[in-house]
Length: 573
Image (cartoon, rainbow, N blue to C red; front, top):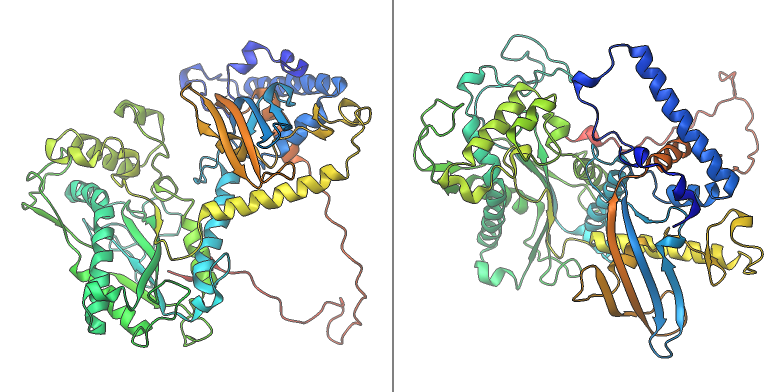
């Protein structure tokens, strides 16, 4: 074990750095100043330990390893080793052992898409989603640019009403008689909670995935009917491609934002038929949304909080508000303000949000209903969770698994889906980013002196392997994913990787063994991450530009050229 980890006392490692297991309310100190003083004392102790690590020469490699996480809030810690061999000669190309890493463990980004769980990883996920949606609208990322000429629309499918709620109906005030601000907590809450159909609201969320699947089936039928074809022969003329994301409204109901496109018979690489137009696609989407029905049997008056009698059987459908807009491109210009950048940014924004961002509910599953007492929830969200929890005990709703998805207000489907031919994949985007980082790190390593006397602790680096500093910056996920699963637990052995990163051989044999060590940084490393995040980074030097002559009427000498404005994702309602 590295010497720097011996400074960690069991008292400090027992408490996570992010305060997930905070002290209960009855144990909090009444004196605020004393509590602030204890926090300062804790920071002073952590700073003193970092000073000891700096004196031992371990602070610089620790800072590099923690900085490679990109600000991940709850990284995953792994222990083990990985060895890459030349499959032809058996020569060891490189070896990675977590005992030789600065932190003693391999630190991996959590990769969580939720903004409330990890803002740094959710930003990366949002950027990848933007590229994925944009590639299906304007090309790029293995998608031909000719896809921008295909007919496509941006559609929004909403949920029906289950009772009047506080809203912002435009220029007129709400039904309650007041004009609600955007931050008003009353928005989305029922006007009369006793008469609100909480049972229907939760069950509609639970059946929303089935509604979407049924909608795509009806959409293909409507397109074939409008083109004068049968559904079986439609695939020989055109292909339906789409990408959708699920968003929570303030009242806690799911609605879908989707990009729908008509391609040729082989996908985006082929030209769509002449009858495929934006008007035809608009008509098909509206007709399919009106025809979509999902039937479910439930008892009359089910749920303790819902006293209204509900007819049997229950039929779920989309709401009457359906918004469909043509996406502007080089061939489809018109007056619509919706462009491919607007749509991609709008969908990417909601790819990292869940029910917790709009309805102030939970972002993790409940083990017991009594856990709700520890969270600050609105009465509306708490009542929907209670309804989902109690409906999960009834036999006719057992297949919906409402207790497992009570924190999602009953919705148990994928928040984002797409067809195979829409565009690229998130796996491809992540692989390209990893390959770019690998090239950057290999170029840096090539310029690093390989003399063992010049590398290592003297240069502020960690332990080295074959003259190169051991790091998990660019190959952390690749190291874990490489290898076939061995019969033993936690082992991965015998994987042949084409075009290995190290060496010139065509195949590389990877032998690895990894074991989960925990989640979250240790207190010292968490304090170091906070210091690195608070340290301002130096700006890159910009080339000097010649000053422009001052113009009359502009005493400060500022240019009067128009500025390029950023994409406003809120342009789409």
